[in-house]
Image (cartoon, rainbow, N blue to C red; front, side, top):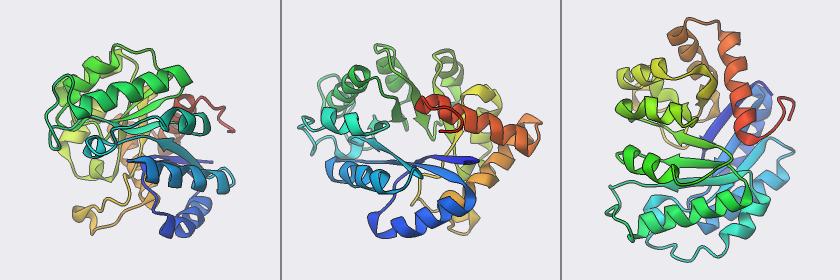
Length: 245
């Protein structure tokens, strides 16, 4: 493997195309569930992918009010690489203690801590609340996916949390400022597929990962290979794997 798409959502109907692309580009895919059904889809795909896919299971904040029973999660985590996509987002409901989102987030963090598995966290417009909540747990690893909390970068880095950047880094000045602040030892790459990137012609998927690596290398003043190797090593540490794993 040479690259890692650390956060995407693979539709089972498109899995053959994604696996072919991943194999051709030597890209490991970390696919995330957003509810019980998509988490089970992720597990099945990982099981049949010959090591090209790793599954993360969990309930996205948009689904927290519907997925109130999480009794399935502990069993699923036993077969998964980690918990994700979990987190908080005020777009979907209030973030108060005892609310659906916060209850789901805390329960999933508890399950991940008990299982010794890393987590992938959605923190849009809730960076402070997410970091505050994460601080109460001892987790195997934390990835703040598509992190946009420019004012919270230092706090996230001091906590040892990974931050992932996707194709929007190619044109977003804000994300470029965030990337420059980040330690190279705590950066991953992602695409959040099937999210399309309008400024890039609507392209999406893991084929964009090398372009993200290249932009990071430019921002860091490093060679492409130096950036690629650093990011790949970071991903292996996040997953608890050797660099050959």
